[in-house]
Length: 102
Image (tube, rainbow, N blue to C red; front, top):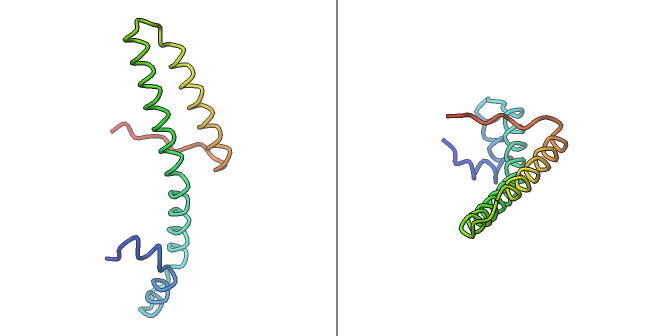
């Protein structure tokens, strides 16, 4: 079994060694490289969304502790999430994958 980091960093070597063994996996390796590139672009976006979620959660907690209505914070957070989903849909050309409920 190969380390995924090794495959990512040495894709040409892996391709050559597989060819030397008589196995052509160019399409699979290209797909793997594309998915890894997409993953690397999505990680910072997910981390930013988590930061926003945590900040909103803290604001809600402060508002509730002060006896204030926090519904406007939920609406603002939901609006940010909708904008984010729309931008992801537009950039990928398709809807984001549905999340498992497991």
